[in-house]
Length: 172
Image 1 (cartoon, rainbow, N blue to C red):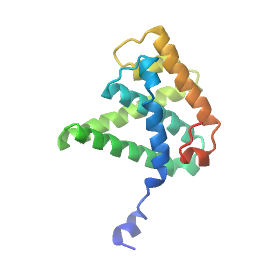
Image 2 (cartoon, one colour):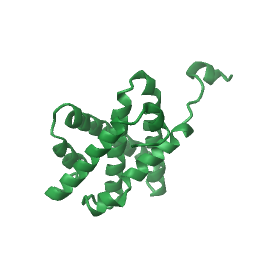
Image 3 (cartoon, rainbow, N blue to C red):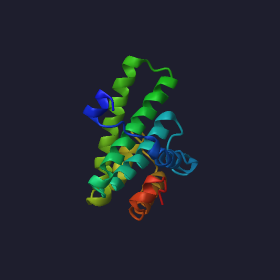
């Protein structure tokens, strides 16, 4: 065992979470969000939907407490790694990437709090969706109803999935 492994423990394997992360990305990139939900089909719009689904999965993992804490952290790390790589592919320089990833993680944390409050704490979920998905562009009532309803449905489906099935990438 290397010196670093003795200090920090064995390297954590993100590969086990690839099916779950792939399912999150696929759900967030489903064309229906953009076609029926009016989410802008842009890099920002796709980020919004992927991070919205990720936020719902992380909220679901919270339910399992310590049993899922490691997986939740790895999932967040996988997201960071993906966003970092995507920004670099777009030609964003090293100095800027770190700052942008930090802002994206802050946005994800804010989204988790807003969605948790809206879905489980009696808050206004539609307002959270409008603020977090349609940032700065007021959605039509139909678009907001569609997206909020779809995210509520995902939240409900995630609540019925066992931790083992979820970690295998099964969102419903």
